[in-house]
Image 1: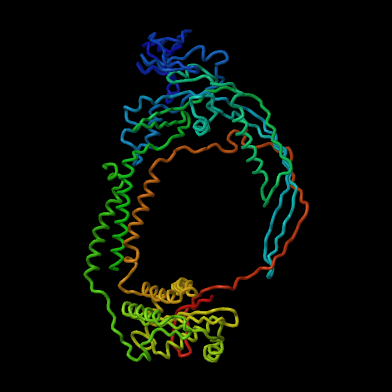
Image 2: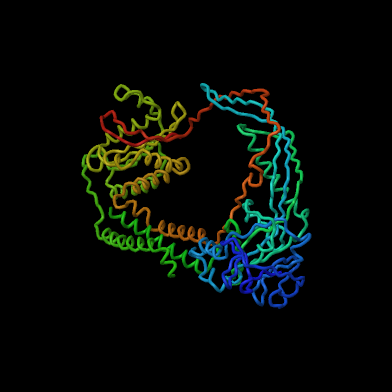
Length: 328
Length: 294
């Protein structure tokens, strides 16, 4: 499947800034028409073989003509996402964010974010499972309040004992767990949170201009990760509800997690892969909020030279101040 | 390097200016003649400075201590007297209560130091003038304390704060039980360090410290700029909780009982040093300094 411009026949893509379909060739807005094909092996536009189609690929860029192709079979039936969060940050903005964050750092290599290295900068829709759960907490504990004060030559310790009971219901809404093997779980966890107000019912047009995947595993396979996250939150909320005590020892604690539903959603992520002296640095930018995950690239040789220069300068400044103090 | 100069433009400018001014100051200081003192007091009762009544030092150790004191006196322009006792000073000090008021045990050595300094007419510039006296009494008084005192007189009273005296006493008397010669020698060295007019903060903080400061700055720069991850977990406890709050089905805090424990507060009266804040001796002279209990 491909979205073509009705005016010029170019590949229409979704533009995050304009929040509309846009033709980069004739600058038309919302001039797209959808062309479907069942063929998953060749480009709908130029017919060249699609070599990058992987087991879970649902959208990709043709290596030959550069058109963005959406694989019909991978966005229909059981593969069809329920929801999609369209990109709100354009490629230019994402590059600007990265440049602001890392580009001006003194030890960053000069080739970082240069035109030659930006070819790998791609927007990807990452598949997520969003879980709704009800957490029911039944808690009973023994707590103390300790007051210490002085009376004459004595220190008095007064301990009051309490029975604490809490019964709480916590409704969790769309707890995300990434369903992509390509993306590291810890990185995707750091990408959160997304702002769910912008979630849309899935439409294929939002995928035009980006890479995409179907869920790599079923909703139950990684569900425990979501349950663990929710249990941790439940524990924190429970702790926050027990305040003002010096100690609190649980006598009975039960956190019952009741599943309500799970939905498949696509979330926007910009990915930049930068190679420097044989090492790969990967940067992720949340395609909605602009949150950045990555490690500062450092030129080791530069860092040693600069550190030495700073050391000599600081030592000489200190010694100069001492010499000045010496005549005062 | 262009990027380095661009980022460090201001520090480099400060560095250059300070370096030029610093080098000029160094040249000026090196061209100055060192301060030398001429003894003004010719009425001192004795040339002796070490009075080891308790016999805690050997003759050789006393000789070494005398040499150290002589060198420190020439350098700083002060008299330094060390008196080592092993006798109760209670009766002696109490006999001065009619003049100076009630005397606490920690002041026994103070009264002795005041009188010893005045009887000896010590002072580098004039009798009762610039100098310092240490009285270290090894005798354990009736209250269980072993007391020492340092009197500072004349310019030393102005140059040394009570906290300096406390520090010097604490530092050197730490060694007195194991190695008295070292402890008293160390006392003289510390005094010379504090009172040498040719030394100042600039000299004390330069040299090896400059290398250390440079190394520290280099290391801090390296670790601040090298590596470093961007991206923190910004998911909060309630991020995915509907309406941001839990629904409370039950919440009870039931008072059961109360227990009370009582403990007597113990006070520690063992070892301490303290400054006097200045005092007037029975002879009417003013001293600074402080004492030590062990």
